Image (cartoon, rainbow, N blue to C red; front, side, top):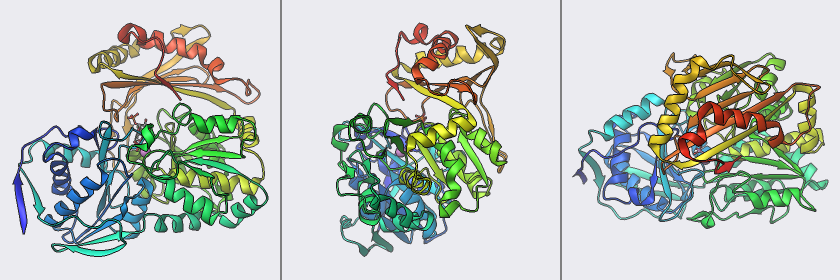
Length: 542
Ligand code: VG1
Ligand code: CO
């Protein structure tokens, strides 16, 4: 019954930040998605009869690729596929299902925070048996396979009904449609004090959650409104749409501006939050107080012991290199190790598996812990809610209290999007060449102490990942980082990360743009952004 379809090597994707991400039109080409899925199955570790987890963020083309993947899995000797109802699984929920049911891995169909729809983006990520993104060695093997592949295997069967929970058979493969939310909600109940949060809600604590018409709608509605008692309507844009209502499901000040307007307006609720396309990111905003993701990581790490799941304390903290050093100061105060990893969640997997870190985070609004092996948007929201319910103070008060104790890392990221790839490459090459000459140079009151191109040595498996972004460190703890995005689908995106540290007793209550003005000017001089790209202002500031 298995059919082998001849095919040719294709333009896979050099291992980027996460999986294969292209325009929907590319995925719609004859055999394209099939080739990639087959390349994955050809190289990943799996025993005969293994279980595969399958689900996505519900974007346009999700159901099509799910049906393709089911047939290819059946033809490749998988024993079981666990698929989220309606094809829906958030990235953290998929990570949990992989771990809970001992699957050999999973395919998560998402282009995360990129827009969806027939002319927009689609993506496929492979996660390994620990529930986390495939490490570089695996993504490299997958890429190599896409360059030699000459056939994919399938079975000829009708589409599986994805909307009715229960089991069906495709060849020798059992396909089980599972509730998308139940296992995840149960895990959250095991980590957090739902009674304390519920009591706080009964006492009048209010929130707004923007699901951005993406995957977290059903999860947030079940957990926040049904289990925690927040008022109906707390979850906004709660129905996953194939095109996310035409928006970018990216929870930042630009794309979630309605939430910001609510939180900075009259009658703002106590707490505001949003998540992205696939549910792994989080935005935290209090009444009149935006919390940078880097600060959120630090504040969560400092207070996590207030939640039952972390009452025994943390084993360590890890952050991606461009994330601010706010978390490092918490680690120091708690006597914990702090790890600095390259951008992308896959670099946290080994540390979490080895019990060297409990909480991890990225400046791009990703925070998570060892409960799964992905960043987890709703998890971060619930940890905040748990902490606020115990401390009974506002987001603004908690942030100020934190800065008074640890100092404040003013932070912003400037993105220059859709640059001609060649120009972006020349900019990075020239910058890298100039590194040795930078230390000692001064820009106003800023003096460069060190500059390097970040390399990471994984303390668990000994592997090295180099060329992970340029760091320019100034005396006193301020910093500028430059790197090219690995997730874009149009040209190149230059990310410039700006961080200024103000110690305890310093200027802790100023506006971020004022505090970063000197650094912004220095960044342009150091990298020649305008000279190379013609751009004078970034496209997105977060
Ligand atoms: C971006 C973020 C990075 C994040 C990645 C995937 O990568 O900067 O921190 O891990 O997206 O997030 P890049 O290479 O474009 O900077 V998601 O929400 O797509 O899983
Ligand atoms: Co995401």
